[in-house]
Image (cartoon, rainbow, N blue to C red):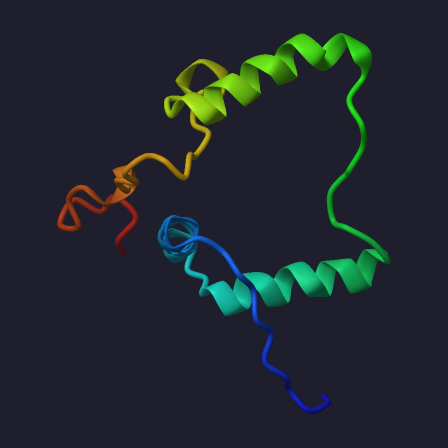
Length: 104
């Protein structure tokens, strides 16, 4: 492995705080998540997700999503179980550590 270099990314403090909260639930640091993303870029020879212009029929949906993102709520466009950077993340499976059905 070659010499490691530092990468600087400019994000809002709110983006970083909420992203780190989600990543910590996943057991990842910001550095690990970025490393995973870059490894996937190298593996796939491009972005690890599709980037495309929307179909004209999707304009209404995009308008609703844009309004939801900029109005502050976003609840009407979020699928059930989908995480949001704007909500408090309680960990539902960690309510009672004494009640562990998987313990051996």
